[in-house]
Image 1 (tube, rainbow, N blue to C red):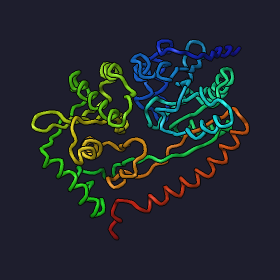
Image 2 (tube, one colour):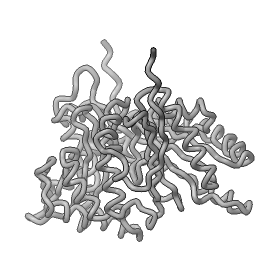
Image 3 (cartoon, rainbow, N blue to C red):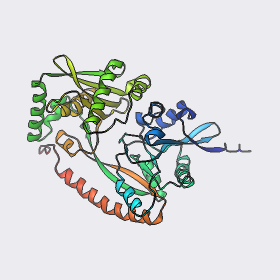
Image 4 (tube, helix red, strand yellow):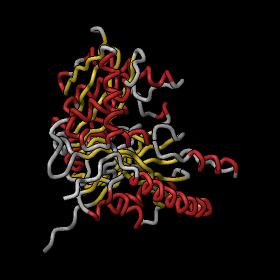
Length: 391
């Protein structure tokens, strides 16, 4: 006789404490594109620090599927009262709903708050378990009369599952640096030699301006970053938002939590002038996979070209020295191409409950997608790298 299959249980949790951290992280590690941002510790820090909570418009709806007592699938979803902190922009959709007398918010977002980094979102032990998640998300949205569901920056398996379920596909563009395949760059100068002459000259000029201003950098990795360093970094981070008349998404308590629980995933660059710290930039890293993500930066006084040095040249030099394969410079920013970061398409998937709006958005995305494709083709023709020498 065959044993009866273990019963499956779907559940939705409003508190990370209800999800077993060890099981979640173990399941995440089995996915095609795990990132530190989907670890239980990171998601818990967002919630417990007050950064992503119902008060800030992010109400956690953590979906899990268990077989017996074993976690076999799950996704972190958020009931949203706005579209801030997502980096896949749907403000025009919300406005169209409003003009037609319909309510766009609340909606459901499957994403990592404030983090435009591609990675596995629908984590699962097998395809059958993953296939249970999308209908469960739709049932959750329908039960709560939500307008839509948005799966942002998922991996290929996530997007394929969403497309098979009839969700709409959308593309946006970021700029990523890749180490040289086969023969990684020996150092930053080796990387520069691969760029076109005008790009090399521009970078050299920018770096010289920073050096001539007396700026020197200290690089701190993992446990080397102490609370005082995090204090200064958060001050710089808050200054960046203040300069744009807005409030930081992440609280100081969030950075205290990731310092405690995820220290190995951070590299901090501190710029000093005359012995006094004046700027800081933060890099998130996955040393096992050789990936790095530029996350946040800020300064206490303006120094020309310091942003480029802190956010691109110092992190790139660090990645090359460590043999990392990829560096992602964050959302948008065509100016990154001149610094060796090339266009990369980042997909998302969307489900809209209203049939007429779903049809209208589908037609819009067809037009937008054609435009994105042409834009990426144009960008790739403007490569900052020299043509390979004729052999």
